[in-house]
Amino acid sequence: MPSLFRFLALCAIIAGLAYGAMFALIIYVEPVERDITIRVPTDKLNR
Image (cartoon, rainbow, N blue to C red; front, side, top):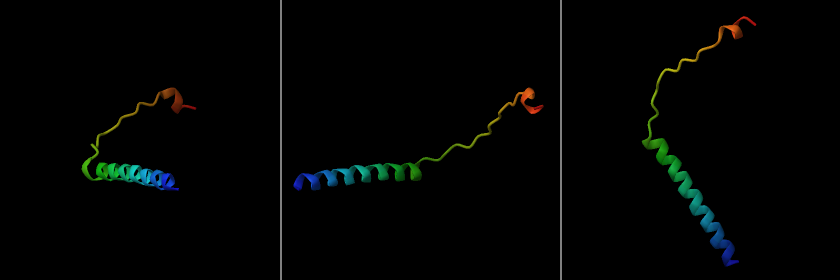
């Protein structure tokens, strides 16, 4: 039974680290906005 508790504690720690990393990305990383141009071939417009 103690090995099960250790396994669950390890899983909880790993999940906490993952959520912490995602939270840090949300707080500290700002996305860069830029314009995107997509060219559509004219043969696809006439169908």
